[in-house]
Amino acid sequence: MILALDQGTTSSRALVFSTEGRILGLAQRELGQIYPRPGWVEHDPVEIWESQLATAREAIERAGIGARQIAAVGLANQRETALLWDRRTGKPLANAIVWQDRRTAPACDALRAAGRAEVIRSKTGLEIDAYFSATKLAWLLEQVPDARRRAAAGELAAGTVDSWLLFNLTAGRTHATDISNASRTMLLNIHTGQWDDDLLALFNIPRDILPRVLPSDAHFADIDARFLGASLPLRGIAGDQQAALFGQDCTRPGLIKNTYGTGCFLLMHTGGTPIASKHRLLTTIAWRHAARGAPIEYALEGSVFTAGAAVQWLRDGLGIIDSAAEVEPLAASVADSAGVFVVPAFAGLGAPYWDPHARAAILGLTRGATKAHIARATLEAIAHQVADLVDAMQADAAELLAQTPLELHVDGGASANNLLLQLQSDLLGLPVTRAPVQETTALGAAKLAGLRLLPSTSTGATFTPALTEADRRCRRSAWRAAVGRTLTR
Image 1 (tube, rainbow, N blue to C red):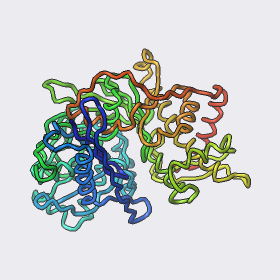
Image 2 (image 1 turned 90 degrees about the horizontal axis):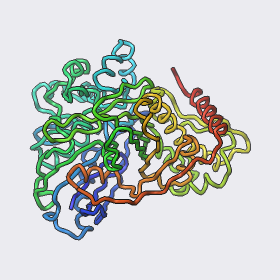
Image 3 (image 1 turned 90 degrees about the vertical axis):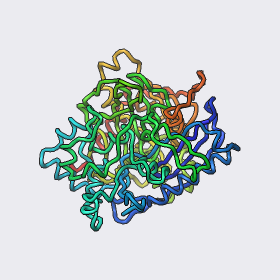
């Protein structure tokens, strides 16, 4: 059996998979969200670690097995979130700065104004944005008292969530990351697969505080026996979206998946050649296998910063629903959104707009607008944002996609919403197929750790377009006009 750890933005989860891919045990704990100032988002690093360890123990117990029956452990994690800790004691020096955090947007603006965008894009495949880890780590080193001196003295370690968990799981013996997570920091040269000296100098980040970069299915380390009851090999790590890509079996060029979570993440496998986007998508590393001579495999990616989080806002911010599950029947109670548009730019807008200063708006309100119209417009906003990414991806990878009929494969919590997926198919004019199991991120981590599944013919539901092409174009044009009202540049 394989134990998969799935550390996400809003919860820590653990699943035990059988060799047939059945879930034998599952545990989940919510993760507290900390908002010190507008635009700032933090997590407690100790809570990340303790919640993940607790779910691992609980999943094993629920599976009714002993730890020695587990062959290996895989890990998938929220990406770009940055942490800084004491290398000797393992004590964090500050809260983790979450990928959604916008505090370093001014620093990114300064880099852009200084003409650094092209060199960063050419080396990392990324846009200059507060989304990524580099400016977060630089902020921690500058703002945490004495951090610069201690980093220079070799006393500190820094990394993303995978590195933090690996460090703790091995009782401080191992400081490493996988190449997919490293590619999201804005410090890794995606062509060489190594930390880049020019970028480290640009962000003033000492190389010695960063983890060692390993292939995604490497034997990273053995977990200390005190934590799970046996010394288990950790044999697979990937950022959550790359893990979902692997879990959906998108392992050859041209295959596309979208995950509906806190945000939305659309990835297309592009093979051993990185495709430079002309539409402000990201060129990122999908994974690299540990086999000798294995090439780096790449993906095109577009990110929607606010997707499921917009439904949470309907619940927690506006109070128009009591649970996320209520949004579908409420939205379905009206035939359309009555001209209402929600642009959920709570954390700025990602691809293809990349405007960190854009802010959310509700447009087109009339006296007849109701909470049902706002709920439907929120679901439409999620689908429109994904359609923006698919449009850009089709343009960037036209040659690759010329031989591949485009079909969107989806997973994530919000993909259980049938209305959302029908809206998605309508706005794309393409079929949308839901994964037969929703745990694709954890399944991808388990597969990277060595889980070899029997062939399966099962597929999830497929949604097909019900809009005319003229209606689709009209709705897409109106959405772009709504987005234009929120842009600051």
